[in-house]
Amino acid sequence: MKKIQLIIILILTLFPSYLNALIEVDITRGNLNPLPIAVSPLYSDNDTTNQLKKEVNVENIGSEISSVIENNLRTTGLFNPLERDAFLQKPDVAHLKPRFEDWSLIKAQALITGKVEFKDDKVRVEFRLWDVLAAREMLAIAFTTVPNNWRRIGHIISDKIYQRLTGEKGYFDTRIIYVSEKGPKTKRIKKLAIMDQDGFNTKYLTLGNELVLTPRFNPTNQMVTYLSYFKNLPRVYLLDIETGIQEVVGDFPGMTFAPRFSPDGKKIIMSFAKDGNSDIYTMDLENRMVEKITNHPSIDTSPSYSPNGKYITFNSDRSGYQQIYVMKSDGTNVKRVSFGNGLYGTPVWSPRGDLIAFTKLHKGKFYIGVMRTDGSGERLLTENYYQEAPSWSPNGRVLIFYRETKSNSDGEGFSAKLWSIDLTGYNERQVITETDASDPSWSSLLTN
Amino acid sequence: MIFTKSTLNIILASCFALLLSACATQKASKIDSQIQGDVYTGTDTVEYLADGVPDRVFFATNESVLTTASRDTLRKQAAWLRKNSDINVVLEGHADERGTREYNLALGERRANAAKDYLMTYGISENRISVISYGKERPVDSGSNPLAWSKNRRSVTVKAN
Image 1 (cartoon, each protein chain N blue to C red):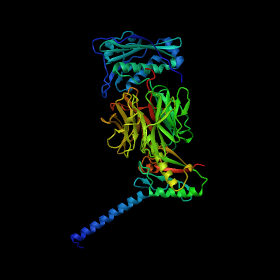
Image 2: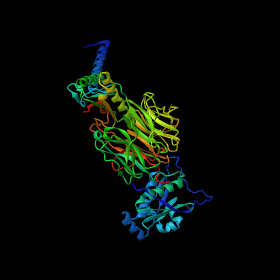
Image 3: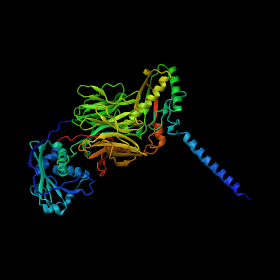
Image 4: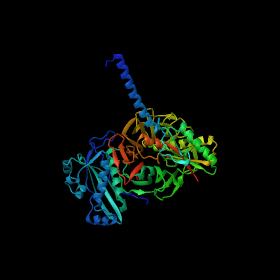
C-alpha cells in the first residue's frame, strides 16, 4: 500500500481565547441529547468538481467529504448531523461568513463549512468549525493531499472536530483488521480483511486457503500479527500490510497463538502450547530473543500489555476456571483480578491505561464488560447469546467486538458480525462488513 | 366398591410412583443414547479406524478428563496401533462454540494431549503421534444446542500417512 502523505499547509486561525464559554460535548456520560450539528457541504467550483469527478469518480467531492464527516459524527452517538435540506445558506457564502441566525433557526449549535480546490494534481481542502450560539469560529485547518485520499480527508476533519468539541482525540482516521467469514460452520472459510473504520475500502489480505484467526495491529506501524494454519501448523505470523511480506514468529515446536504487540511495537506476546499446557512467551522482533513469561501447568493465554508496557493482563484457568490475571511484564507478581460470578476471558488493556475490557460467560450468556485494572468497578456493557474479543478504539472510548447468532440443528441462522459500543454502554451498533466477520482489531490513528 | 381411606391412599401413591418412574426411565433412556452428564455417548458422528476401533473420544464442558468410555476407545486404538506399527496418527483436539476463541485453542490442545498421554501409557511411541488443536473452528455438528456441543467437544485420531 502506498504511503499516505498529508501536509497540513496552514492553520488559518488559532483557537481564539474569548471569555465566553464555547460548546463542549461531555463524552463521559451516555449522551442522550446528541449535539445538533450542521455539516454544510464543502464548496467546490465547477472546474474543481468536474476535474475531480474524472480523477476519483465521485459526483461532487465536497458533498461526499461532508457525508463522510456526517456519518462519522453520527456513529459516535454524541452528535446529531442535521438534514441538509433545511440549510438556508449556500455553502460558499457560509464558509466565508455564516449568517448565524439562519443556522440557529434550524437549531444547529455547531456548523462545519469548507472548500475544496484542485491544483497541480493535488486536492486542497480547508474547513472551519463554528459555534453558532456564540457566533464564533472555533477551528480552521487546511490539508493538501492526492485525490485518492479524499475519504481520509473526511476522517481527519472528523478527528479535528471531535477533538475540538470533546477535548479528546478522535478515532476516525483509523482502520479495522478482521477475519472475513464465509460458508457453513463445519467448513468455514476465513480470510484476513482490512477496512476503514467506517466500513469503506475493504481489502482482503489472504485468499482463504488456510484458516486464519485473531489479527492484531502493531500500535506503531502497519504491521499485523495473526494466527495462521498454513501447512496445517497453527503458528503466529507477522504480516507487513504495505508489502504483503509475512513470516513465522519464532521457532516453537508446537502451536503458538493469541498474539499481540507490545505498546512500543517491538515485541510480540503470545501463547505457546505444548504437551497440553499453554504458557505466555514474548519474542523481541529486533534480536529475536524469546522469553518465557508464565510457567504454570494451567492454560495461560490472551495476554495484553498495559500501555506503559509495565504490566500484562492475561487469561488463566489456574483457579480451576477461566479468570483474568495481572502480572508485571517479567511474569512476577501474578494477581487474580476477576472475582465475579462466571468465567472471564480475552482481557484487553485500555489505551488510556485505567481499564481492562473483557468477555464474561455467565449462565449461558456472553457479556462484554470493563473493570478497573485491580478488578474493581466491573461494568457489563452488553449481553448477548454469543459475543467476545473486544478491541479498543485508539482513544479508549469505544469497543469493537464480534457477535454470533444461534443456529438451528441444521446449522441455519448462524451469522457472525462486528459490533461497537461506547464505553458508557450506550450507542451499540453493528459495524457493516461485506461478509460475515469476527476478531476485529482497531488500528492506531494513521496521522496524529 | 368401597375402599378404606388408607387403601385408597396406597393405591394413589403407587399409581403416582409408577407414573414417576415411567417418566424417569423414559427421560433417562433418551439421554443415555446421546449425552451422559455432559459427555456425548452416541455414535452417529464416530468413524472407525478399523473394525471396532472408534476414531474419537468426547469430553465434558471445559474438561479434558478422559471418561471410562474414552479410555476404552483409546485402549482399542492403542491395540490397533501396536498391530499396525507403520501407521502414525494425528490427534485433533476440538472445543464447542460456547467459549472464547483463544482459550478454546488451548483447551483443544489439552484434550488432544490427554488422549496422546493415554495412548503413550499403552505403549505407543511419542514420535508416532502428533497433536493439533482446532479450538472451536471445525465443529462436526453446526447446531447451537447441548447435544451438538457435546459432539464437538472431542479428540479425533486421524491417520497421518
